[in-house]
Length: 238
Image (cartoon, rainbow, N blue to C red; front, side, top):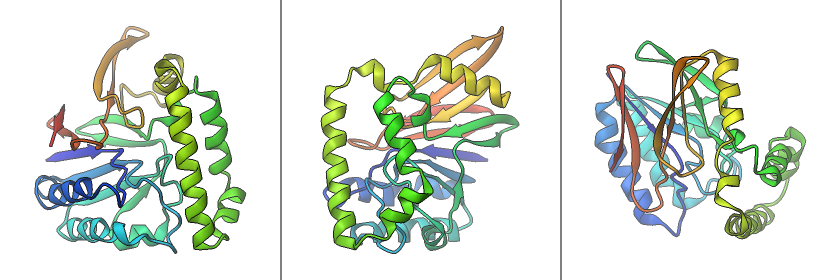
């Protein structure tokens, strides 16, 4: 059985070619898999299940077609689409995953994460994440009008672009001490995550034990997928 992992598609109305690439992937390679895990930032912005943007409808339908075909579909919240809820899950036939989540991947306990909580050197972002994941903040956000939510989403996107451009690259990457903490806390030897847009497979040791951190790629130019089968995982470009 083949299990697929993707993240950081950032589907948006101004990037229709990536939406089409995703739809083609769901109708092709993903149909041949046992399960597909989407580890956050599927959408560039998710303003609430009661306000699904028209440009997302084709992707939602394609995900439902995939799950209806028998492929198990799992979606994790990212830092862009943390307001995804039960209605989206029903519309796509997906199961929403907590972050982190532990799965059995070909007999190996594996932690799945979006990856932003590993970037503890980015202090300003961690403060922002704490704010927007607060249930009270989310309740206030969902109480706003559609126009107000759109305006706030645009504002947050512009702030994110500016701050990202001004930050040192190492600050936006994972903190190794935090990575090791997650391995130790969950007693696993494998972590799969996205967020940093730096696809790679990092192998090292913790207390003389071999561990592996697999980073998924983004979909800004090409599709990036991790293909796992029979205990082996390989990063591929679609």
